[in-house]
Every structure is written in C-alpha cells, then in structure tokens.
Image 1 (cartoon, rainbow, N blue to C red):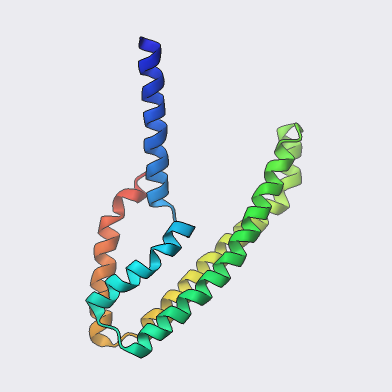
Image 2: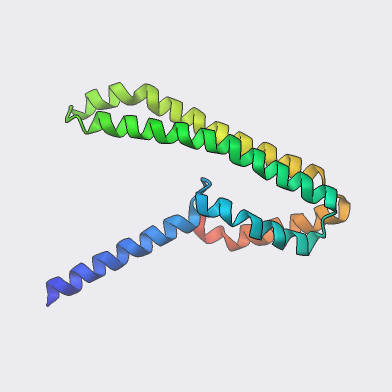
Length: 153
C-alpha cells in the first residue's frame, strides 16, 4: 500500500512540475501563438485600437511567427543533433567536446529569438499614442506582478 501511495505522489509531483514549467516558459509555443489572437482582443478592449493599428499588429504578429518559427526549427534541429551525440554512448567529456559548437549555436539562436521579440515589442509600442502607452505600461506592470511567481521557480 505504501508503494502505491509513494508512486502516486511521485506522479503527482511530476505533473505539477510539468504544469508549472508550461506556465512559466519564456519561449513561444504553438499554444501561446494560438492564444495571441485572444490577447490582441483583450488589448483592443483596453486600448481601443484604430483600424490602422489593428492591421499593423496583425502584420507584426505574422512577421514574428515567421521569424521565430525559423529560429525554433533551427533550435530543434540542434537539440536533436546534440541528443544523438549523447545517445552514442561516448564518455561525457567526449560528448561535451563534440557538442560544444552546437551548444554555442543554441545560445546565439536564443539571443536571436529574444532580439526578434524585443524588436516586435518596440514596433508595437511605437504605434501607440500617449494615452494608450500609459494604459499599456500599467498593463505590463500588472502582468509582471501576476507572473512574478513564475520567476521564483
């Protein structure tokens, strides 16, 4: 009986860890990209976008998806290549040596994804007028406080 309870507890802990990691992930996922339209609607109710702003936001998001999609594909390929090296059964120091270049490429790709995200955010903020910018700054603070718990993990 103790073994069953222990196994259930371990499974529960793994599920909780997985759920928390999904909520706090910084990288864009397909689910996050699908929810972007809902987020745009939420922002529209708060900021009252003009039709030109809505068109710009839509085009901006499409460009973001294309750019980040390319980067994510490259990252996935590198992750697969790194995993394959470690699955060869080589000693850890040899596998680390063989994958050092690929790991460096991953760091560069992560920086590129962050740069793309930051550039898209700056472009978005550039189309806002003063009133919208003030409301948006308050929303950012609200979301930062809401997501502060994710950074503690």
